[in-house]
Image (cartoon, rainbow, N blue to C red; front, side):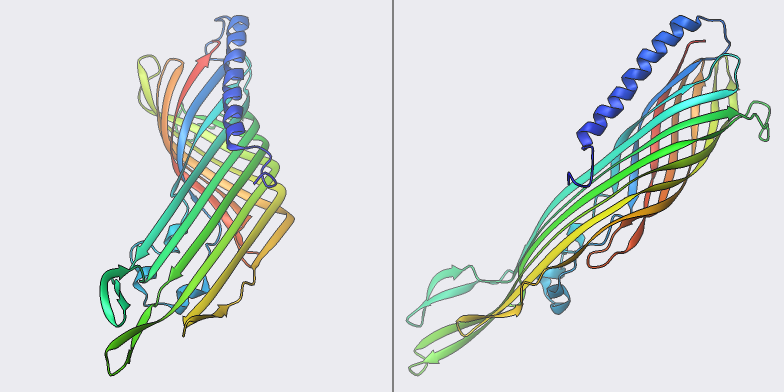
Length: 374
């Protein structure tokens, strides 16, 4: 994984903490320098978190023996080997934002960071109910053999991402939604980095059959076993890292209360960027299968590996938007909302061949903002 990501999830959380600490230091300095001459904060500090549904993380491994045994209960009951590979539904992360507006100016300078990650590990084991007795000289011993159908799957998926924005905006104050509406049009640079890793291991004996041979006039009953055994493994690592110009338009409209005693504000925003970066994928898988009959094994699937490797420079369009509600009183604000961001063609999600997929993040968020340096 180290060859696809330059920073680990731990380093990213350290980055978020560093941004927050710098914000607090900068705010303290600004408050001391600015005093209370203005009528609005010079600096806004925002900290929060998000729970995002992540889509477009790539294909899952589908071994050939699944299609060859469509009626096997150990493969298709409960959680199947395909379902065990599904990534987590949500990624959890944090965000930080610093906005600075010089006194007497309509220009706003901001820097923000959003970090998220998710992981899961699933071990699914299914086994048939039948047991088969051992025989000695044609007579059952009463001791059950551990010979039955089974399927055992282990799958792990890890994902982490980071989005950094550096923007310069102007309060355009269009007033299209009322006199109290604020509207900021911003231009700047967006940096985005995504990485995921999936591993898969499945073993199965889905079709055990037993026949009996009688000897010495039926005095001796000899069991004969017939079955297939399969083993499949897979690993896939995917990443994208890019940077490019961005534009955003954000606004807020009060619809209840007042600024002195507290007001409720509707927040909205749209953004777009064009990222130039590097896409990497390394996928490998292998499957073996053997058939047991007449006391010996025959190879069904030879251990021939598959997969592909991809490294290329690509251009990724990105669009997103958010809507939410804030409660603001004085120079403090609590916000709740829903946000979505889509990075078109950012991920090569293929197993054996390249397959471009759109990476999407969507879900609720919450944040607390404090204004300093009136």
